[in-house]
Amino acid sequence: MNSDIARLEPADQDALVAARGLLEYPSLAARLTALVGLPLEEAVRLLPSGLSRRVHRIAEAAILRALGTAMLSMPGRHPTADRSDLHRVLGMATGAAGGFFGLPGTLAELPVSTTLMLRSIADIARSHGEDLDDATARLACVEVFAYGGRRADDDAAETGYYGLRMALAFHLSTVSRTLVEKGLAHASLPATVQLARAVAARFGVAVGDKLAFQMVPVAGAISGATLNAIFMQHFQDMARGHFTVRRLERAYDADTVRAAYEALAGNDVRRPREQSRARVLGHAPPAD
Image (cartoon, rainbow, N blue to C red; front, side):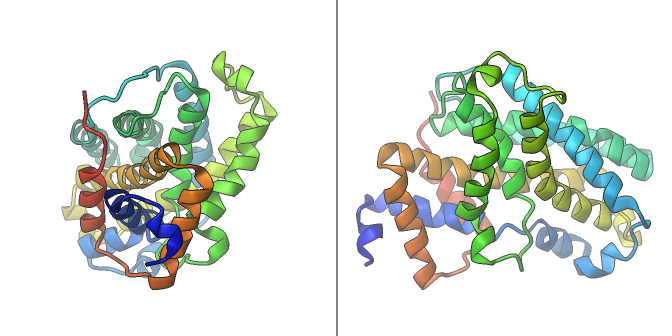
């Protein structure tokens, strides 16, 4: 066994393997392909021209709103129950409402879905021992939207979990802790805009994938509620992986966990997502 991995307790080694399985191979497109039965490339051809720029503008606005929510109304010191199922049900309801009005309705409900996902991510964070009275933990919740925007073929080292996390760290460092803790995350603050754009650049990819599949004729039989449930599940899985890593970093230290994480690449096995998800849940701290 690699000496870097051996520094972790056996249960924590399993948790890290499971977390890495979620974080390094996130594929919303693969989930939607399995549901609809059509490759992403084919679905993308059905999107109206010029929609991509509009999607990214809406995604950026949604992330700015999420930042404001994160800074103003996400207190919590103690671990709480993971209410992912409840948030998924609410997300399905908004998806059904948006889907009823077609593409315009889907775009209009995106900020609502994003806020619901943020609430769910916050619950997952607390269930892993995060103190959301800490501004850094709150921003870590918003980071999750960036991790969920990678496709299955986006495996270059520089775009891996830690590579993307380091890139986001630059933007996070420019957001004054004092301003964040006072709830001044606002579109007029240049640092906030830059952070929102960095996250939205990835989040918009996932939104675009979701919209592409919604344009597939056969998907008409599949409700907006079902598509939204898959969309939310995807980001909940990203949150479980991210906050498992952060929990282990608190238990050991960041360098030790990163070395162990990167050592796993040497004997990489792509585990099924549901198996990875179950193992992450199994090693989360018990709820109060």
